[in-house]
Length: 109
Image (cartoon, rainbow, N blue to C red; front, side, top):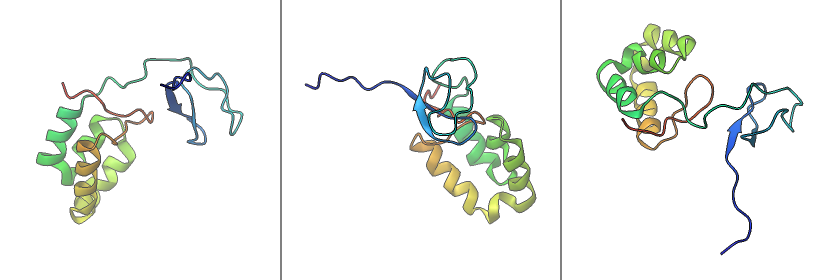
């Protein structure tokens, strides 16, 4: 067993670099980070999944997680003719879909 424990991480809001969850300043770009908050988003996987399956071409799942800009793009392109929606569904099911703050959706209900 390793004597080093892995620390929780999050994504820098300015440059997107992976940083320590408790970091005050990003080590990559030097931008001050917002106050530490819960590691997970309050958005749930199940509603995002159901919205993507039923209303995916209209970007409903993206509006749900706060990604209004890309939600509008999906609405105008019908989910990238379905390909973008399919990609998002795979990302949601595999646990890699993120909300507008870059936090992963981890809890199903």
